[in-house]
Image 1 (cartoon, rainbow, N blue to C red):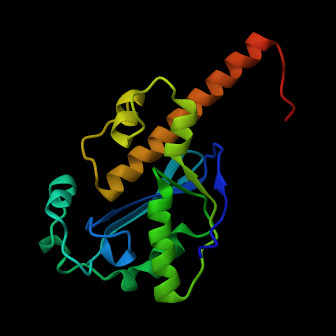
Image 2 (image 1 turned 90 degrees about the vertical axis):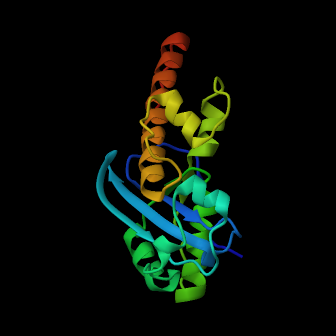
Image 3 (image 1 turned 60 degrees about the vertical axis):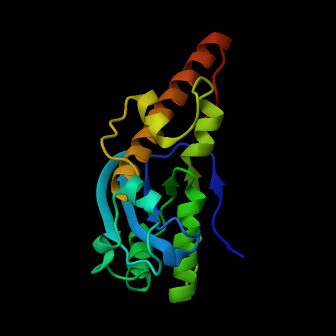
Length: 195
């Protein structure tokens, strides 16, 4: 059983956004092919971490065409056991942000638990969950759809670093939308929230 932090439903400006790619063969950490994390402070990038990871299994052909990551690209990459401690140290105590974040977070959690006998207790925020609540006028809640909806540039998709950047930008755009809607509601109903 995983003893992670809380699944938060709030807008913050300090967080670390993560995104992973895998072989497509399982939801196990030994199938991770790429890990990326970007630290934000006050809504601005301050640091980043990204690495390819040598998976234990070969990458499925449809995943190769989706991500562009090939088995050959991973030949000299470190195994997950060699990088997981650095990944978790980079994340630190930050709130973890991601799109369908439990998939990525739980892979990191499991790798850290098995390889380092460590436990992560970070709270996390899922942009997919927020979008489903906030964006009622959208055809679906895929990251690429949200990027189009909010005018976030998406030249590259399904790669860890680029998806991390796009997820954070979508999150900050949703924060702006939420604050605007909240202000409009206040004006319409003529009330003020206590701070």
